[in-house]
Image 1: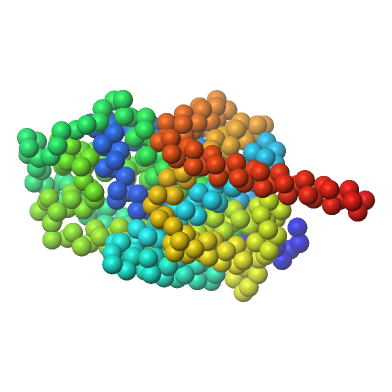
Image 2: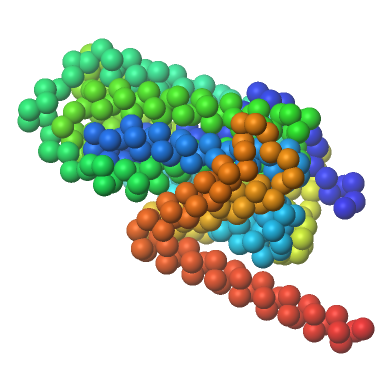
Length: 421
């Protein structure tokens, strides 16, 4: 690989941790507790604990692999290095396609928070603006991420204060009876897991982190620990503050928690915090997809021009602009809220490949024994196949189309090579 294709190592531990935590505290934290409570009911905390345990398995696998292979691309690179080209391709293709749909949904969610009648043009403007930030270099991305993360954390602290102060609605007649129960813990954990999945952004930035062998594992574990504490605390507080199914019935549970408290006048602050969370998660997503597309283009699994790196700030500008164009196209031509569901299945396949790749490593630290990779692998598959059938079928079709396309391209290349040999 020629020197001009390399990205520069400009991120420290604080920057990397902020990007990971910013991804995990995206818009999901403002909405995920309601559907999860609808499935698990009073066992919501158990679902959070289970999701956190699966996330830990995946996080330590990603951390070990990122320290060994500190390059852009994350699990796409690890799968290729440890398992072969095809597992790596499936992980990378699932990540790029699924997360591109997630970007469109995140941008549209931001648009609805800001001005519902103009949601689509506002979403497009957000994508353009954040892509421009990325083109000014990874340090600008990290700075904006830290600013947005600060707003989100302050908002969550305000919601926590409101939930503690109350007054808490009376249990009788406060809302519909809780429909969920112990049988819904597994699918609820699947929902909660996706809220934890943002630590992958740190791994995809492996080529831009200083002292990656130390920085990446520390940043991944620190970001996961911070997110786990926040999600667990919010689950406990919301269950106590909005009892008897009121949490499960809410369309905006954190906003309702504030409205039904002595701090109700601060409801607009929660809306602003949710908008900031959307932007922070969208920024990290665009960055991560661009780096994975860069890595796939380097290996000729995506068109070669996507591997171009240049400009004053040494960024993968072609990949970044292509991701932005794809997201804008989705916003203009599809109902992104209906197509984004399949990305959940793709993310779990992505982490299953990460666990399988980590299992093949020769050395494992004491906090991440090899058997943990086995647990992580089968846990990912279990959660993946308990998703709604439409999500499974949709992403399986996307993976099949990608695999068929790669097969045909490789066949064409072999025929061209034999014809000129």
